Length: 101
Image (cartoon, rainbow, N blue to C red; front, side):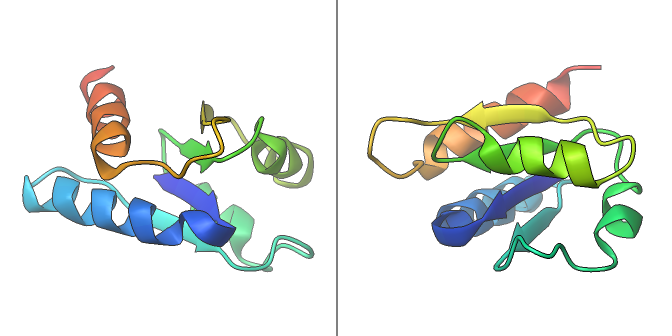
């Protein structure tokens, strides 16, 4: 599962859509509001074995989820260059994670 929030939606949605066209299983959970978290956040997240939180910062939202969602573990994919993610770099990361056991 790919998790994002705020302005990352467009690039995450496009990358996930392209990966799914390759018949790979990946889901997107995007938050518009991070406080308070939606009531069903834990229920949704608990259904996935592998989670990556993509952020254009040092990973504050991933840390927020770790504190507020029981048993939350994730891979962090952060970018701090003042530029948005590219679809290519997102797809590369998602494919890498899908290939790992």
